[in-house]
Image (cartoon, rainbow, N blue to C red; front, side, top):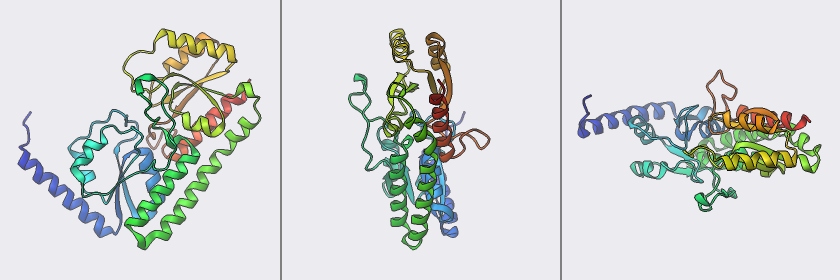
Length: 301
């Protein structure tokens, strides 16, 4: 395979940036690049017709372990604004962003009260999945709104109106789970999952967490002692259901369900949107599927 000389590659990237930038300018739209599909969908809803939004990490791909390529350099370099989650989700992003100091970037988790990961191996690092909290997602939406208003004050009113509508739709999706949780006895307020990716959602709804592993990025197999501890807690607390997260394998949660004699409640989309024909092609779909699936599982005895 022939390698492209660095000087030639630089000219190619520059040409791509020039064409992409010219197209966005001609359309009169902000060119927004988000690190992954959840943020891209949020930004598209707030920007509306005045934004052109792309994601570096495509739906179905792992944002934690993403490795940017040449096309990603070209895409981000042509942006008017780059959005990233922060909270140690995109550990690759700071080095990646060194290429684009002239492009504004915004950390959308700004203002979120971080929930720490509770394993010594993570040394108090934040749980990165704050978008799974309806309350914190509202902060994301407001941060995106403010960033767009600053970059494009002419359409500030549009961005503000879009953000209000979008946030209201998100809040409405939480109603079934709030109703279910309100009707449960104290001892049933458990959320058992394969990964600690729902800490913010659990906090919002007053649920206690139980999980097999801290992050799905861990390479090692789940220790048998951890599985035994989770099964023992399920039995002691009479937890009726356990869920898995997607992307990710459902097998660990299924195995625990079989060992503990409880129901496997299904996969909860977390880190990525699905394709257009999947269960969660938008962020609101992702939250609806996740909250409705939890509500249905907890409501059953």
